[in-house]
Length: 217
Image 1 (cartoon, rainbow, N blue to C red):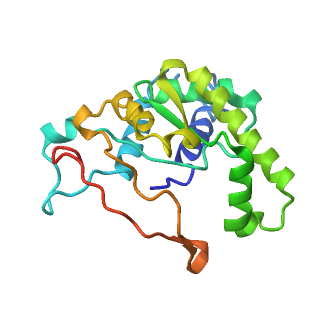
Image 2: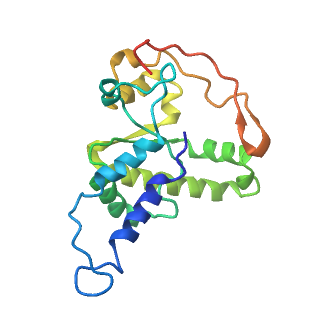
């Protein structure tokens, strides 16, 4: 589920405990130099801890099973209030602290349709001019595109305007992430259709069923 911009909070914490006023000379803020990469394992462990695997029959996975788990999460709040000029620093942080991770950026190339959907479904956007919403979405897409380019072969851009029409496009991502080919999607679940806004603005869906290979969790 949504991690509420955990990566940005982690980055902020690391900056505060490693940067000024800490320094490597005499004084009350003195401490020994921190070797580069020292906080990578700590960062990864924190993300792993807040996105644990499912319990199987009420117990944790065995060590051998857990070693083969692919840990992931989604976030729509990645590095909020950042601009394209901040991308090199963001990419450097991600690559230093999550060097083996892969980054999947989901966007919608049909920006006008996304803006219309956002205005009709989200209270915050309901009274905004559509051109302003389009501009905000385009700015977000530009940031994601620049970050994906900076991360190189660790990243992939995924256009929802394509994968909702062709599941094979989505299955390319399944393979790229390292899942077994048997874990490919035979079809898609319902994609935000026939929904209503529930209490607190949350969406209520009518889910369809999807069966994958028994070896896929």
